[in-house]
Every structure is written in structure tokens, then in C-alpha cells.
Image (cartoon, rainbow, N blue to C red; front, side, top):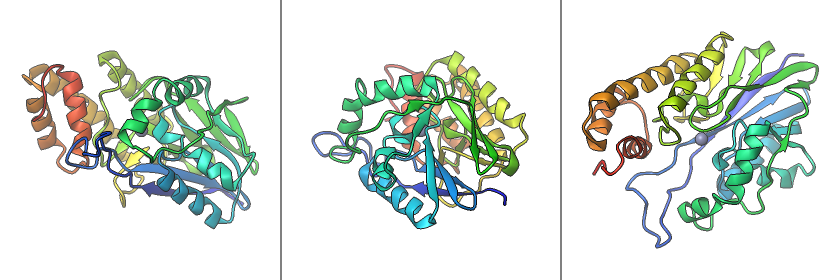
Length: 282
Ligand SMILES: [Zn+2]
């Protein structure tokens, strides 16, 4: 019996300010991927979104699979990839919720020092009583005798990110190291972090995967490994344009022209305003 996987892409709700107005005119968050890697009987869930409604969609989807959930794994510490595990855990009590040491450290911060951010962006919508992942005992998990590897890849859109590699499937579940059809979030670090990000992409590419599931992907997009190159190209374009653009608006305009097919310009605006402090895209 071999393994298989399924991906559910959930659409996040509109982010709003405490006064009820939208932060930006467009949906301010990107679609989020949850991946169920399964054998004949057992399954591992990778990542779950941060709002109750969307996390419930994931929980219902896992229940409907009929599989026996044996673990949940967060690719990195950002709340939009693990808050939802608490909702799934209501259907699968006691199932281990896991992450690497780096993921757990960032997750602890997200659940405490950063929770005000989440609740201000998504008032009344964030999953309650989030469960901070526990540190994995081993970087290899055996799912019905097949290896599922939790691979540390250093920084990408945030600190200490990881991906999941399933050699028998040629599958990589990339978390935020790969963005598929969505503007990558560049506001999470400096130029060094963006160079590290490219190294993380290269680390996945070296495995020559047959499928790469991006943490944020446009609904309906495939999981082709070309999204590794596409993300790398985007990062290089960003460095090139950053060196010549005069302000956030010019950066965002030039990036848009090169990446017209990517959705969620709100993220591009955040990146632009991060790269050109004191200027705005509007
Ligand atoms: Zn993310």
C-alpha cells in the first residue's frame, strides 16, 4: 500500500480594523493550504488556517476522509498555519500537534505577544484556545511504514521555516517557502532573510520533487514543481526592482507588471511599504 495526499485550499475572510472597516479594499489575506498525507488507514495533517470558520472546514474535510488522524504538523510558527489545529483537535482529541523547535518558539510568541495583531485583523474570528505545537522527537515520522520527513530549511518569509518531504510520493509540502499564484509576503524580514529564502527553495529543488504544495496558493492551481522557480524568480525580481524603484508605489507597480497573474495585491502592497519605509502604494 502506498501513500497519497490531498490538499484543501481555504479562502480567508476579509481582514478588518477594530472599527469594522476593511484594512484594504481587497481581501487582505491569501488562501491557505492544508495537506492530508495518508495511507490506507492513517493520516497526517500539515497546516490549518487561523479562523474558526475555515479551520472547521478543514476539520470537516479530515473527518470526511474517513482516515485516522495520527498527527498534525505546522510547517512554521505563523498563526495562519497552525491556530486551526485546535479546531481539528475537537474531532480528534489527543492527536499530537507538532513542530520543530524553531516553529514552537515562534508559535509561542504568536499565541501571546502577537495575538493582539490577529484579533485586531480578524475580530471574533480567530480560533479560541489555540494549542501551541510540541517539539518533535524526531525529524522522521513513520506513516504506515513510509517516511514523512520534517526538514529544517532556515528562514524564508519568516524565521526557522520547514517543509515536509515524503520520498515515496516525491511530495514536498513547502509551507511559506513556496507561493503559488499568490504574491509572496516580503515584509517578514530583511535582505539577508530573502537570500536565505532562495537557499530554502534550492534545498527543496535539490530533492527533485514531483509535486510541491505551496502554503499559500491560488485555488485551482496545480502543485507542479515549477512553482519553486516561480517563487525564486519573484524574489530575484524583487531585489532587482528594489534597487531602482524610488518608492513603494513604483516598486509595487513594476512588480505587478512582471507578475500580473498573481492574486492578492494587498500582500504586494505590504511588501512594498516594508521595503520602502515611509512611502505608501496609494
Ligand atoms: Zn503563511
